[in-house]
Length: 321
Image (cartoon, rainbow, N blue to C red):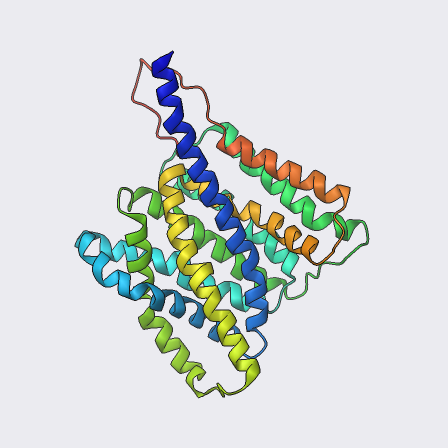
């Protein structure tokens, strides 16, 4: 009895930390859309994306100088590739796509990330994921789709499917997210997640500097108030939405597993509705039901299954939850 109690305490503490990181990520990424919208006042999509990642790399550069010595040299190539797949390319894909497609449609497509993580893990990394986790991912996705589409079905709002080809850019971004999460979970496992984030994003200073120069960013009129506001919004998006969030995300992947970490995309609508309440918007019973379905999905995907003693073979290689 005493031994079970002692084991229970660190288990609960670990889960509390994981859930806290999860909620903070939801808050950061759920609030980042406003910064992205503010950035469009005076900047192009490519300028926003490049400045976002450049700002993240710049704020992490002083730390990366010291952290790079603590990482194995043979892992640097994989680490840089992780930053390209997980930060650089998705930033450009989303920035370009969101100028042409409806934000609600983008939210649905972004929520495909956990499904991409699971499929890529199974197909390319030979993971065996518990059926209840798959059910949880699909349940959460259903709740999110209903949350976004139900107002359109009820006539309260419309969702534009114009420029449908741009949805492929968001789909590609979610696929790249899926690859990156699995890369971090499998190939960079055991390395300090803060070191991974600082060094990988610092390397992105090189390509983003070239893009900012090519996109004539340095020729902008920085005395213009609109330009100043857009630049500050993009820089804040990079510092919080990319730098801080990436470090927290890598910590969450290592603590709670790739699949659970990717479920952060399901928490973003809660933050969006929170901002709605702040702006005195009305929350309907349909939204409450849909959010409950999303919560059920997250619960199923993260609920620990009872361990079965396996006497006939090696242990399962399930993604940790």
